[in-house]
Amino acid sequence: MPEKAAPSKLSPLANLIFLSRWLQVPLYLGLILAQGVYVYHFWYELVDLISAAFGSQTALDHILSNFPHLGDKPSRLTETTIMLVVLGLIDVVMISNLLIMVIIGGYETFVSKLGLDGHPDQPEWLSHVNASVLKVKLAMAIIGISSIHLLKTFINPEANANVWIAQTVIHAVFLLSAIAIAYCDYIVTKTQHFSPEH
Image (cartoon, rainbow, N blue to C red; front, side):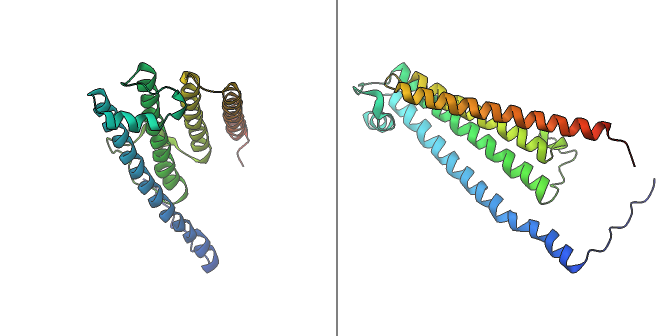
């Protein structure tokens, strides 16, 4: 097998600039801590939901305090309330997925390789991740989160029509932005594929 060429020696300035990528590590560590907060929030809300289902008035009051727009406070869990809480839990999971993509994909792309080749738990998307792929995946994740928020608004019986319109417009903007990002990535990839080799 051909031997790998020895890496060229960097000048002090170039080496400093290249090493500056490690300044992003505290940012990714901070996102990991934020993920821990989301895990705590998820379980807190889930315990409240289960407790309210078994008749805990305190848990029910806490759940209803998150939805002041429901008007008359029901004395027990209703289908609408359960659906709103579950959609909130799904929202937390999707944001957590977004955090994982940013933490793992961003670190792998911009800081250093994680060395996960051949690992049985390596995410499928990580094997071909780059800045363009990461942007498209993040855009799709944001659209999913926006869809959950839009669905929660539609389910809410007291939601204002202006809120519906505003959230629908925002969701449409997210969708168009994702399509534009994906199309630009397609053009760049196609251009690189057909560009003549030098």
